[in-house]
Length: 495
Image (cartoon, rainbow, N blue to C red; front, side, top):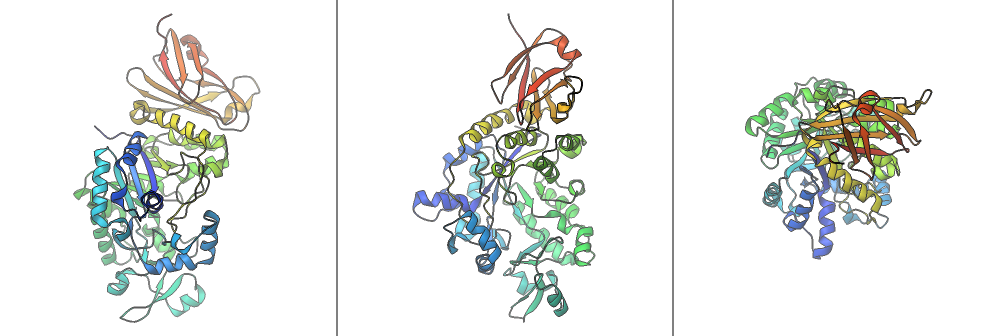
């Protein structure tokens, strides 16, 4: 069975998942303890990829920093009012070694889980953190030259960006890993991409990871681009990603690369070998609630849109139910997930959970699922499993005024999915809090004669329309605020 053109991905916080499972086992759970029934459930949801967050070995140094950092600690306590030190294993992005954490069962347990996923048609994605390592990574002792060193003046001027690291060879002043727009991450050390030996070592790590999974999500992938690295550190670097993606695919031809990327660098990373790049611009425009900007975003060429990873929440962003609110969250979900690209979901999203869980935590809060949100996602996931939405041809449609002087048509965004034969979907969203009307200009060449049925797969609406009317005027819609339709369009048969 060939892979769908538009797959879905489901992100799971592995440590939180296993902590929850541990309660039923009355002992610490490992990857081997994940029941087959749970994997079957994931398969039935229609997702293609499982991204297991935070499976790699982390160290005690990072854990100590996470537990003692006052600002982080306040954030953790907001998530878990009954917070305990043991709930804070440390950030899954402060990696001390790319081997599966011993508490999860090690590399062998991951290999067995991967095989169980494969049997269900599910592919495995893991983390790759190119920019930095944990403070207690063995390279600090063995290859200090892999890191960016600081001076006493650096420490005086930017004490939050540098730290002394003790080692058998003496103390070293090294830079924390960082995004140039923010202070350094105090549980990490910055890798030096101006060092070719470091690039070769990171490539070796990446090849080894590629033997354990089917794809990687590359954390803050734009930070190692030469122009960004030069701007941040004043050090010239050779391009890493074109070489890395090419080299890995020589060994693993179908390996998938997904980039966490910001600053309008999505196309740059797509051109350097990434299959998908985060679509933060769409997310921000949906949060803003501006339908015109969202529609403009969807006017981009398909060779760009097809390689965007579209999401409403993840471990970095607030929960969609909390960030968007009732009504707007479902409208934003239809716009996000019935568009082209990779459909990127987050554990807890389908239940309407409202509390974000930091990747420093190993336990999540107990929340009551929202039944309305669950019903909505059940229907949306059913639509996403239809062949037209997974393999079809996508086309953005024009929406025009229904009446003179009525500007509410500007709030509508509509498109079609088509496959040869009778597989047609028409998606239309009133992305506004107010009721609106419009005519959607249809593009189905088959609408030449007869009667056509439009059956809403997200609701209960069912319309019968004459082909001449649809061709001449378009489809008239009168839609409440934040409401969406995903119509199956089919010829009416019989009387």
